[in-house]
Amino acid sequence: MFDVKNEIDLSEGHEGLVIGLFDKPEKFTGTLEKLDEQFEGQLRELVRAGDISAKFKNISKVHSFGKIGAKRIWFVGLGKEKDLNFERLSEALGKVFKALKASKLQECGVLLDSFTTGSVNELEAAHAVSEAFALATYQFHGYKQKSNEPEKRIEKITVYSEGNDKEDISASLTVGLAFGKGTNSARTLVNIPGNLLTAKDMAEYARELAAKYDFEVEILDKEEIEKLGMGAFLAVNQGSTEPPKMIVLKYQGKEQWQDVIGLVGKGITFDTGGYSIKTKAGIVGMKSDMGGAAAVLGAMEIIGEIKPEQNVVAVIPSTDNMISGNAFKPDDVITSMSGKTIEVLNTDAEGRLVLADAVTYAKHHGAEYLVDVATLTGGVITALGLHTTGAMTNHETLYEQVLEASMEAGEPMWQLPLFEKDKERVRNSKVADLNNSPGSEGHAIVAGAFIGEFTEGTPWVHLDIAGTATTSKEHDLGPAGATGVMTRTLALFVERFDPIEK
Ligand code: BES
Ligand code: ZN
Ligand code: ZN
Image (cartoon, rainbow, N blue to C red; front, side, top):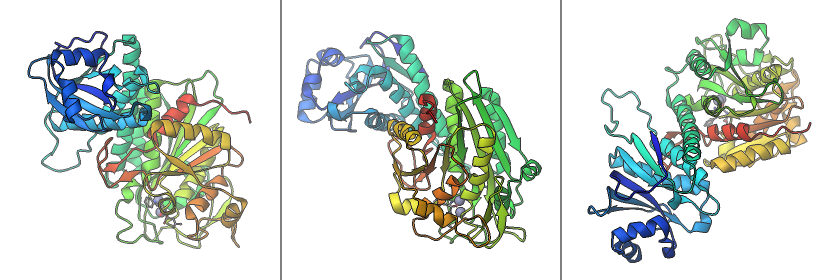
C-alpha cells in the first residue's frame, strides 16, 4: 500500500502528486522551488493569481503538461503554518484523498515535507497521511444488489521523505494505517443492522479478533451469566429471543498482570426501549446502540497491531433490548452481580444496567482503571450537541490522560459534573439500593452517576457517545453513518497510559 522513497525525483510517473501548500508565498523553497523551476516559475504565478489556493482545505488540481513525471499535481491548502496541528492536517488530507478517490485515481505520490511545520513533524505527518487515507476513503457497502462502489480505488501511495529514515517513516505509516483501519472496523460494526449483528455475531467477531492478535478470550453464555448472578444484564436480555453474551478480551503487554486497564463498551445490538418503548422516530437508528462496544473492539484491533507495553481487559455486555411476555418491566427489582439491588423505573435506561455488571466483571478480571464507552443518553445530546462526547469521572488524573488522548485523536470531549447530589438521586429508592432512572433533569449525569456506583473506588472515566457515534452528514474523514468515535482515543490512551499512584 505505502512505499517510502528518500529521494524526490520529479520525473517519476504518478497519476497524481499531492503537495501541501501553506498560506505563505515565500514557502516556495526546497522541493516546491525545484518543482516551480520545472514550470518556469508559473506555479508561483498561479498561486499569486489565486488559481492555486493555500486556503485551509482548498484543493487545487493542476495539470503538469508533461513538465514533471506526475500527470497532475493536487495542491492541498493548509492555511497559516502556525494554525496547523495534527487534527487540521488530518482533515485537509482527508479532503484530498476523497477528491482523489472521486477522480478514480489508483495511485499517487505524496511530498511529506510539504505538510510539516514546527508543531507537526514528518513522523506525525506520515501517521496523518495513512490514517486520513483509511478514514476518508472508508465506505460501508450495504446490501444493495447492485453495488454503487466505485470500481477504481487507490491501491498504492508513494511517500517521499528526504529528512527521515525510511524505516521510521514506514513505521509511522503502518501505525497510522492501523488507527484508521481499527476505526473503520468500529464503523462497520455500528453500520451493520441489528438483525445481522446479534450478540452471538459480536461474540464471534471478538473471537476472530482474539485469534488474529493472540488475545485471551472468554465469552460467557447465558448459563454462565446466570451463575455469576449478573441480574442487571440478564434483566435487559429477558425479553429477547437472542441469548446474551458477555465478551471478554485480554491483552497482556507487560510481564505481570498488573496496572490493568479495563475498557468497557455498551453492546446493545438494538434498543427498542423495552416496555418504556421508544417513539417511532426515536427507535430508528438504534442499531447504533453498540457504538461503545464497537469503539472498544476497534481499539483492541489497534492494540493488537501496535502491541503497547500495557495490560488491557475489554469487557462487552451484548444483547438487544426487546419486548415480550418475558421482558423486564418498570417497577421490577433486580439484583446486580455486585449484590446491589436496582429498582427499574425505565426499561429504556438499559445501558447503565448492562454496564453495571460489566464494570463489576472487569474488576473481577483485575481492572484497576476503568474507561466505559456507551451510547448512553439522549441527555448528552441536549447538553453537548453532536460533536462532543460527554465525560464523567471519579478520578481527575485518569480523566486528564483520557482527555489528552482525545485531543490528540481529534475527538473532542467535555466533562460533566458528578456531585454528591447527583449520586443521591440514583440512590433514592424505597425498595432497592438504587433506581435506574431518577427523572429527566440532567439525565446524562445521573446515568453516569449510576455506573459510578459500581466502580466502588476504582479510578474510572465514563464516556457518553450518544451524540457522536453517528453522523447524518458526510465529513472530511468519512461518510455519513457511524463515526467510530473513541476508537482512536481509547487506543492512544492505552498506548500512552502512565499508571497512577493510588
Ligand atoms: N440508547 C439510548 C440512548 C441514545 C439516544 C443513543 C439517542 C443514541 C441516540 C439509551 O438506552 C436510552 O434510551 N436512554 C434514555 C434514558 C432515559 C430513559 C432516562 C434517553 O436518553 O432518553
Ligand atoms: Zn434505552
Ligand atoms: Zn440504549
